[in-house]
Image 1 (cartoon, rainbow, N blue to C red):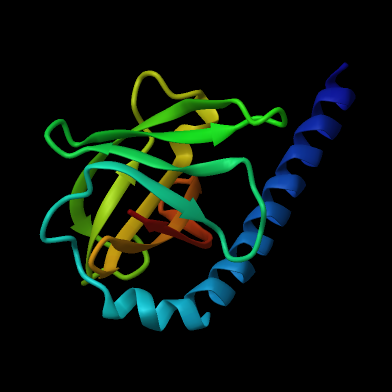
Image 2: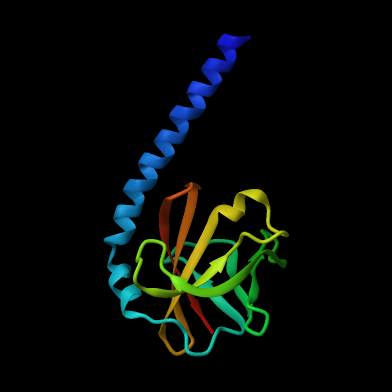
Amino acid sequence: MKLILLILFSFLLILLFVVIFFGLIRTLYVQNNANQKEFLSGRVPKNMPHGFYKGSIGNIKVPWLGKRFDSKKSMGINRFADEKGKTGEKYPFTTYVGDGIQDKNFKVLKIDYAVNKSPWWIKYILDEVVETASGRYLGKVHVTILPGIPLTLGYFRLAK
């Protein structure tokens, strides 16, 4: 039994190492991507987003439709469509302004999923958003598997 537990623990440790290794490579790629220059030229929105904003991830077709913001409550939720076209909302978040997780001296609008109603696995995700034009936003998706080691996965766009 001890041998099985040791093998399982070793496997999980190796898996964690591999995920972090490839996550760091992905982070380097994203931080040096053409979108990074646009992200750094953006700014914290003068007027916080309110209402629904259509989302996109490059040319990738995904069930995620965008985000609905409530600027008065500093909250929001994601909107999705299922395979039948029925829409629903899940993964609530809070919003606040703070320094970037990778871009340390750069203010961003943070979209934080560490709220009570979120599933445990979504609480590791933190989005950061900047306004690039009126009603248009560029965001970055970060995940922190181990404290102090944020991994940046990619960019998304929001438009009113």
